[in-house]
Image (cartoon, rainbow, N blue to C red; front, top):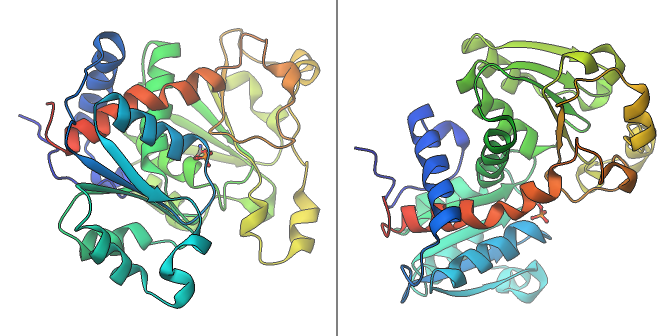
Amino acid sequence: MISLKSKDIISILDFTKEEILYILDLSKRMEKEGSSDILKGKVLANLFFEPSTRTRLSFETAMKRLGGEVVGFDELGKTSTVKGESLRDSVKIIEGYCDIIVLRHFLEGASRLTADSVNIPVINAGDGASQHPTQTFVDLYTIKKVKGKLENLSIGFLGDLKYGRTAHSLAYAMANFNAEMYFISPPSLRIPKDYLEELESRNVSYHEVESINEVSSKLDILYCTRIQKERFADPVEYEKVRGIYKLSKSVMDELNVKDDLKILHPLPRVDEMDESLDATSYAVYFQQAHSGIPVRETLLATVLGAIQ
Ligand code: CP
């Protein structure tokens, strides 16, 4: 019997394949049947030290749809961090105000530190360039929905694979499903070695290339990512790779791709995906973002012990 009650969600590696599939099944049920007021009386603290549209608002919507309340902040400047309070002290106070913490922070490891500091569940909503596990549940849910399966797919990760935390978490997750992986990036934005070593330890077949033309015909899924300008220490380095990939309807018309290729993107997009792509059969990124509601409803309800 799987139970995720009181479990922290920090890294996708903390979940077995069975637990991942269990969450996806519950999310499907949540989307179909809904579930009202099961979190009545519970309070979520949404602590966002970095900007967010989708993650913060979908967690807030999910909690409210299930009858719960939400407190929190969406910028560091409005918190006592600016007076010098440590993250550890802040979260030890906040745990007394709520039942669960969702944390986005610019530092890798901030969610793990928080989980180690408090006695309520903590959900990592993105920690620096490390991981974004709830986005991964959303991505897997979308892939399963549009492809009908998760096993034996060829997936291309395009763009900023150095700083792209959504790509890191999804690559780890897809390692459970016998995926063939293609990492498409400029040399300066290659996926860090640690991630490749983990994939190698799990016998994942992967390829690193610079151009999508080299691999486009093989892909079932193209996971496009934004180049994360805010994480570059040197703006000159960002300028060297800015706009390096630009997908559009006309680019797709020229590329050799499978008819049933699907393009996902965690969003926001900047210039890597033109709006002309939106009306093509490849685009599923808006559907993907909307799946954030049933998936995050399920994660909150499961961790708080309201469903299983
Ligand atoms: N996908 C995602 O994390 O988007 P936000 O930064 O808007 O939350």
